[in-house]
Image (cartoon, rainbow, N blue to C red; front, side, top):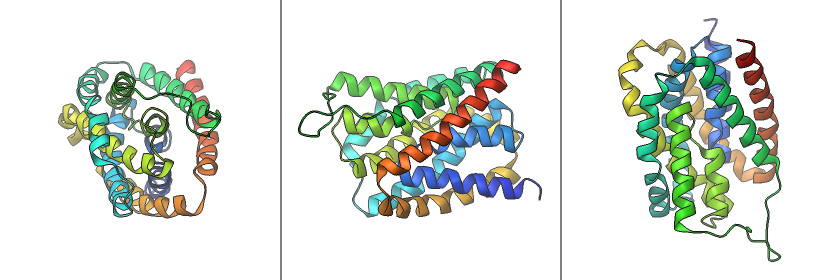
Length: 252
């Protein structure tokens, strides 16, 4: 009972982030599992993949019903990251927990900085970055690597990448990002399935249920507020989480 309420609250926040922003929920899932619910870093990354996979599918269905998912482009973008996600998913099980925590904190800090940094645009308002197959492949592989190694879906980088690299409108970038997250999370989860039996399902189950419900609310929230407002609010929270995790890793 003592962990049920924190699990439900954390799950709801994660679902809101994934459903409303098309990513970022896993950046809160891992620290919530470690610092609120007592998971080890290795167990937290595996549990995060389970939670994010289920929640992303829910958010994906919600955005797909609204016609905001580009299936072909999203699957091609994800394909570049699938082998990298699977490979680094195997590697992460052999890395020290402190190293994983520090790497996660640095990545979260970078993500927050990217969210707060104004996008560079041309005079007609379009993103300044030019799209290219090589750039799209590189970004897709990087997202897969982050998913496999740290248990994050990569949507915090996927949404800006889909907007700047592939010139997606923001609404479609959010929906398509959930497709990429789902594919990457599933690929990273496969080599970790052997460790899933040792996880605390009494925590993961309510966390996941709350996140799934939150994803539907997040989609409705995205309809009411501008993407920039939601993104800045999330970036501030993420920056605070990154600072706390980095201090924790350095102290230990």
